[in-house]
Image (cartoon, rainbow, N blue to C red):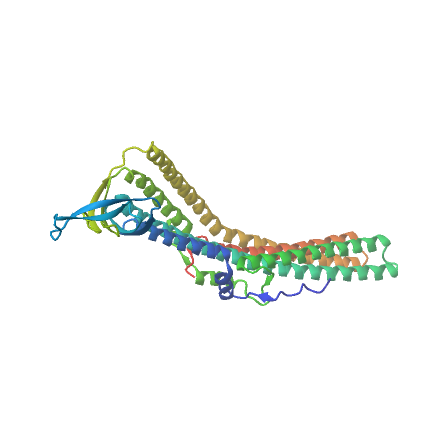
Amino acid sequence: MLQPVACPKIEIATWEEALKHVRARSTDLRVALGEVERAEGLSRVALAGALTTVNGSATYTHNFISSETQQFARDPASPTGFRTTPVSTPFPNFLTAQATAIQPVFAPRAWYAIGTAERNIEVARLTVEDTKRTIALAVANAMVAVVTAERIAELNRLGLRNALTRLELTQRKTTLGGGTGLDVVRARQDVENARQLLVQGDETLRQARESLGLALGIPEQVGVPPNVDISGLEAGARNVCRQANSIDERSDVAALNARVEVAHRQHQDVKYQFSPTVDVRSTVGTTTIDTGAAPNTTWNVQAVLTVPLWEGGARYGNLRETHAAEGIAIQRLEAQKRKAIIEVEQARRAVTVADERRKVAVQSRDLAAENDRLTRASYLEGRGTSLELVAAAQALREAEINLALREFDLVKARVLAVLVLAYCPW
C-alpha cells in the first residue's frame, strides 16, 4: 500500500496541451459550434424568403377514353372553301410543361426576418465564447483537483509510513517492558485508520483524474506531472483569456442581452404578419395540344397583392405569446446580471479569504508538528501515553492535509478571479 498509484497514460502539464485536447474532443464546444452553423443555415433560409423563387413542372397525360369529332378549318384550295380534320376529344396523349418565377416586391416580414436571423448568429457566437470560458474554468479546476489529490495521496502514504514506525516503536517498547498491550492496540488502530485514509485518498485521486479526462473530452484517466508548476495556471489563464471591461461584456450576459433583442424582434415579426405583400409572378407554359385557336406556348406576367384578413385569431395569440417571451428574456437577463455581479465580487474576495485560510493552516500545521515531536519525545522518555501519541499523529495528518487543501484552494481562487469576468478567444 505504500506504493503510489500508477501514473495514467496521458498527462497534461500546460494550458496549451489541455486546449489542444479540448479543441479536438470537447463535446460541449462542438455543440456550441454546431449551434453557430445551425444559425447560419437558418439565416440563409431567411434570406431565401426575399429572393426569387423559380418552380418548374411537366405533365404527361394519356386518356383512355376519347371520342373523335370533325373539326372544320378554312381551306381556299378546297372546292367548298373548307376542309374537315378528325380530332380526338379529349386528346389521347399530350405533354404540358410550365415554369413559374415569383419575386417578392413588398415583403416587410421576410426582410425583417433576415435581421432576426443575423441576431441569432450573434447569440450563438456569444454562447461559444461563454462555453470556452466555462470549459477553461472546468479544466483549470480539474487540473488543480488532480494535483491536490496527488498531494493528499502522498501525505496519506507518509502518514501510513509514520504510523507503521510508531507501531514498531510501541511493540519494541512493550517487549522491553516499557509499554502495555493497550499501547500496541492503539498503535494498530492508528495504522488501520491511516490505511483507510490511504484507500479513500487513492480512489479520490482516480476520480479526479477521470474528471480531468472528461473535461478534456478523453474517456479515461488523465494525470498531471508531479513537477508541474500549479501556480502557473493563473498565468496560463491570463494568456488564453482576456478580461472584459464590465459585466455587460461577459459572454453569458452579452448572450442573454442578444436574446432579449431577438425576443423583441420575434414580437415585431408577428406584427408584420398583418401587413400585405406584393409579388411579381411570371409563368411560361407550353403544351403539345394543338387546337388551332390558341398558341402552344404562352407567357404571362402578374402582380399579386395579398392582404391577410382573418385566420381565426392566431396572430393575436402569437402577439401575446411573444410579448410574454420578451418579458421572460428581460427578467433572465436581469437575474444573470445580478448573479454575475455577485460572482465577480465573491471571486475577487475569495483570493484574500483563501490566502488567510492558508496562513492559518500553516500555523496549525506547524503547531501540530511541534506537538507531535514533543509527544514522541515524551513517550520515549516514558512520560507520555500511547493515546497522546496517536492523537498527536492524527492531528498532524489532518493539519498536513488541510494545509494542502488550502494551498490549492488559493490557486483555484486566483484562476477563478481571472476567468469570472473574461472572454476566451482561443
